Image 1: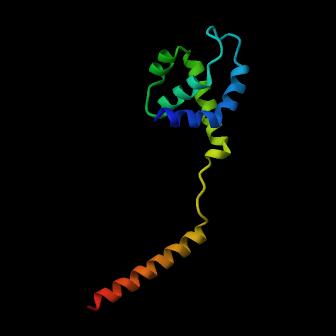
Image 2 (image 1 turned 180 degrees about the vertical axis):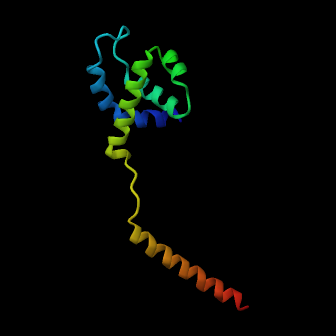
Image 3 (image 1 turned 90 degrees about the horizontal axis):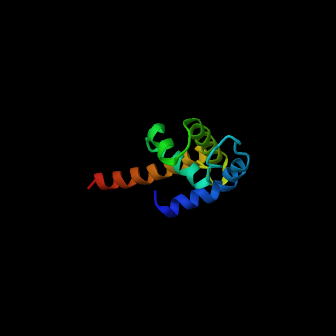
Length: 113
């Protein structure tokens, strides 16, 4: 993921992560975990990284890692700007039907030669 893509994604979910950062548990010796680190840990985990390496590298406890990961994934899932929309099945079928008929008519015209 490019730096630009990382920051674009972060900007979409930053407010959720900062909100949770303000409510960080008081027992965290290093203070709240920044939104940048929260996203970094989650993306690394999604890419196949081990939570053992990730929490150690980012300087957080294993328990904090799991909480952060869940929070980031929930923020991404709830972000309306990141929603994937699919075409209505009926519209897609009509388009495919038209494209097939065009292809079939072209094919039959060539096969008679």
